[in-house]
Image (cartoon, rainbow, N blue to C red; front, top):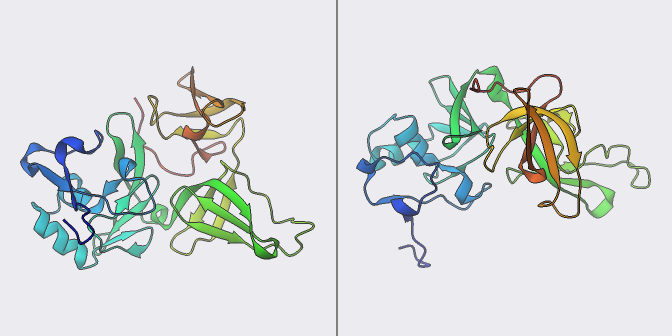
Length: 250
């Protein structure tokens, strides 16, 4: 127990189904730390190092390796063994030239997908909220917990405001420079990030907006078939082509 009575571990039976945990790891499992992604939809860094990448055999060795600063998330060294690594995050292993992106998957929920050095220099972030702050500047709240400030020269005529909720930013990491804006609109490519159709990729053919995110729907054309999903389960990944490499879908 921690000083505040909060447990550092989870019982293995209480962990999300998508965590690929083997019985040999016993009754308890590392608990994700508070962070940018929901604990129920993230991979603790120690789990990635020990179980998915299998760089080491046990908890103690994984904790030591992480503490030495051998792993970067989005270009920044992370030493917290429970750090929650989530959707679209880029994991890099120091000294090995190995890089991975976290992607949704129909079988495991979240997977590590190996990417190239050049692709590890950027990530895609969805705009979950947009607000106007003091001085008329814009603040974009992204799906991975980061905030980006857009400075506006003239608040009465904010020409810099080209962003909307659900749009996706292609940003450099760790600098956070906006490289491209991918609009949430019909004709663009989308990835389904949650729900029963998680992991499917296709072109948006219809957006039906109704009151409330649970009522709004998006239709995606996937392998000549149409899939309907919730508005908030949709993540734009490109226009004519995807901005990121993806696993080959069956």
